[in-house]
Amino acid sequence: MTNRTRIRQLSPPLIETALQTPVFLAPMAGITDLPFRRLVAGFGAGLVVSEMVASQEMAQAKPSVRARARVELGMGEVGTAVQLAGREARWMAEAARMAEDGGARIIDINMGCPAKKVTGGMSGSALMRTPDHALRLIEAVVGAVSVPVTLKTRLGWDHDSLNAPDIARRAESAGIRMITIHGRTRCQFYKGSADWAAIAAVRRAVDIPVIANGDIVCGVTARRALAASGGDGVMIGRGIQGRPWLIARVAAELRRAPPPAPPAGAALADLVCAHHEAMLDFHGRDVGLRAARKHLGWYLEAAGAAP
Image 1 (cartoon, rainbow, N blue to C red):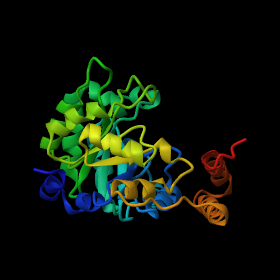
Image 2: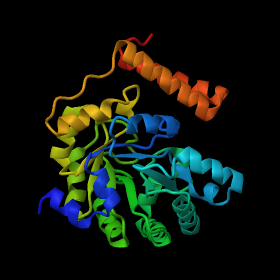
Image 3: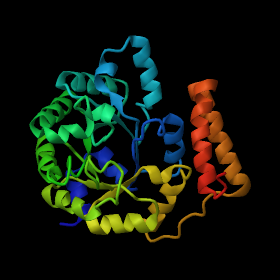
Image 4: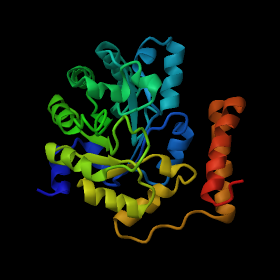
């Protein structure tokens, strides 16, 4: 059975549609806000994933905060997944229901964030250390909503516990419809190189689509990641900073088509200015300017003009 046949047979329509352009935007806290996700979506991303949302905070928020969250997360936007993190099944389920009620088309569960402030609360990649508990969270979320639920995780907590294949099997049985694997352990954080070949063990363990993530920065690395992992698509994270058009170039190269030229000159200036204005409009002047400075630095770096 080919990957494409498997996708047609096992993927719900929203997942199948996303995989028609199997190049996704990874969730990155403080980076992939709604203006940036819209910008990347405009370059043809098959799926963009929201910044991680703390499930308990969302579930216990005041109505006004919930209404703002619906806007910030772009819940009703096509091609967007809302990512939830947490350690308690009841809050994960309630947050998932709220997200679906707010228009979310796909719910993604975070089991991959390596940050100490997340793993210290037994969320994110710390859940890989307690797979039975992780499965209870997955079952709670899947049981709470009718939209597809996906999972993002890592190879394992460390190299002595590479349990991603087993977790993936159990997650698939619990109703997960697609899984993204970052090719590092939690203890690696972002050090060393992503081990795309290790993702192949997950690909062999399940029939649902598997997405390769980690160190994908161009069409060449995307093809290498897919060849090594056997995956059905790629998810790009840090490599897209300052280069939102990278999605279109990678997608073209995966189709063996000529990649579109990146914007330059006046076109690049217009893109940066439009992104800047979108951040100010969305966040307000003070927060928007802080966010814009980060992105401007990345644009300059990508253009080879960083100070």
